[in-house]
Length: 230
Image (cartoon, rainbow, N blue to C red; front, side):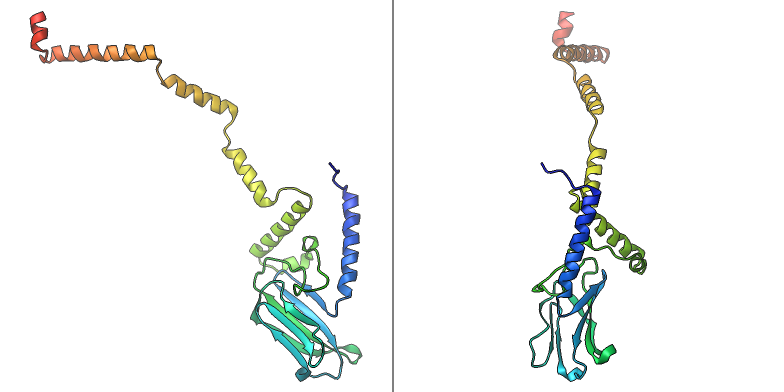
């Protein structure tokens, strides 16, 4: 069985993966960033273009970005659904005489990271390595921040082959509800002591018969056979 990597080995492996990922993302014809709630895309275009020259088609599950008459820069199924009414795009002038199409997508599910803008993207990121900046976490409300931190914790646990927070909770419940051997032994002895042996049961029945006869005599309810026998 292969041994687990040491902390230094894991750190070196993570650094190499981040560098490779950064290099791959730089090859895309657009740049994109995300928070737990939304996603922003920037597509560089020529400075002489106007809004009417840009073709952006945005639906709940699809995105197309292109300069009219040219091959689309982005054209495919979104990795996850978005809220179209809360999403938008603009054409902005940037330094150097160029322009860029800026697209803002509002995530429908605000508790998941995207590994790419569209499912047919050539390069994707490892969402288990995402670590939001503290300043970004500070912008979240208490409940959302707690859920994000829980998600990050679970991702790290899975990476190390350890149980997630939910699995840990189930294990704790089993520990609480599982009776100890001592308590099980005591319970078994108590049940056994409350069940009379056959001899004890016979003696108990005999006592009950004698008691019934005595009560009948006291109440004058003995039979004629019993009276004649007396």
